[in-house]
Image (cartoon, rainbow, N blue to C red; front, side):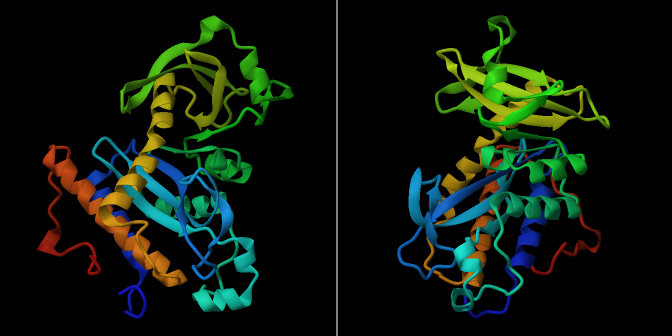
Length: 321
């Protein structure tokens, strides 16, 4: 099934996307980008290298998978996945051949893989209102420019060292945040956590005037108990977007971490022994299909789903499904 059988993991991925949108799709959905590490021993597993793993919180021998999650009021699950291929692998013909990496696959950064998945979702007509991701994607100016060129609204993680234009000058985000007066912060919740609502103090600062019906913002947040520890996000979207909506988009970023955790525990996302390129994509894709199915079952159990529309002639949308 994972090695020699004749089937396309990408075709099943497309079916997964159709299934998720059919059952969970909403026009104000949030697309969430993130990566996770799969710890491995040895040097044979495709893409394995000494690299930072957010899962372990340190540099480890691991594979890095980049994921695109879909979050709505009905449920949260995955739409897409890509394996990050380190430069050492991409430039080594022997390792590529041994792992069965297709010739056309280049070395790509995580933001580049993210853009590929977002472009596929857009081309497939996936409904969504906002996108989000951590600073890995927020600091990638090419990804930001592409999103804005496509007129896609997003709130991306930033850092205190991010440089931005304020009026006619260019400043560090930390310098801008350090000038904020105490009376401009607003307490808002970005969603429920383990111990209740996750409440922070927030400030939204416009970066220049709106252009082409779009506005850029710097979004700062802090805990009242730690006023000096300020985190930053970069947003772009319609000028009339309320602060509360931006805050909720930031809060949705946790959706993918929670989904990875449940996928590891319930459908064996990280429980595999395949080493090849096709084996990795086949296992991960089947695990994501199983996770989406369980998510839809849960939504139906709590009454979050509407009855699916009847299909003409009773034919399924895809024979692969």
